[in-house]
Length: 296
Image 1 (spheres, rainbow, N blue to C red):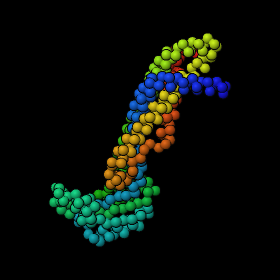
Image 2 (tube, one colour; image 1 turned 135 degrees about the horizontal axis):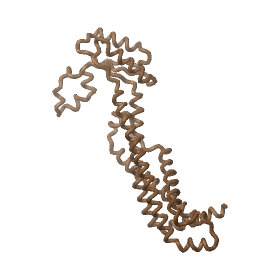
Image 3 (tube, rainbow, N blue to C red; image 1 turned 30 degrees about the horizontal axis):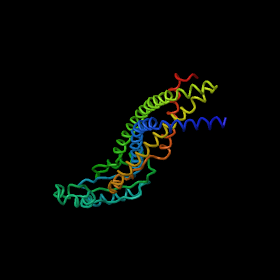
Image 4 (cartoon, rainbow, N blue to C red; image 1 turned 180 degrees about the vertical axis):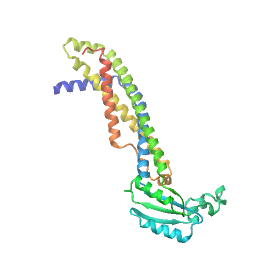
């Protein structure tokens, strides 16, 4: 059995080297399909990381009414500080809010420079423990909105919900692309293996005449199909990684600080899974491609 496996592997390697142009074209075609799938998975992965980060932001902005007196603000701040799970409460005056929005810097040569300080409401920036769930935070917000000195409360949950919808849409797109990749692998590898079999028809007929089994005849072609799928996925990952790190190196570091997440490449589990799945699909495509040409 071991000698048989060595013989099949050697024939597969010899066949790929002898017809390298044919196999290279197949690998390139598969790589194009896997690049599309990998790009979709890359976007979904980073959106999911951003969703997780924002869902654990643990922050709420309590916007105060203009008529709120300093005593009401101090009382509200003291009351919030005593709420279980609240880590810090910071008062932000209209001038500080204007400065933190960057109007002082961005508006020197723009239209925002003329905006008055009064255009920015005073607020209390509440930092809560990340372990607090959405239900508890929503209950806290509902109570805060009922207080007389509070104008509005922003918890940024709406942005998290939008990201969740984007992630679900991205997953659906990735599934659709996976189906396209499946069809591409079956079509490309199947056609390539059938063409390779036609070119080696004489070799196959000689092997059948000397008593070779169908498994021994088909074995090299199945290995070649698996290798094409794995190489196509690996080549796609390499190309995608090069493009990703090139783009990331040109991104402003302040952007990552603003959104709170550094863009990351695909986890190694997903990358390895793409290569393994590509290999399995290639082998299956080769088996189906040989079904009518070599009797089972």
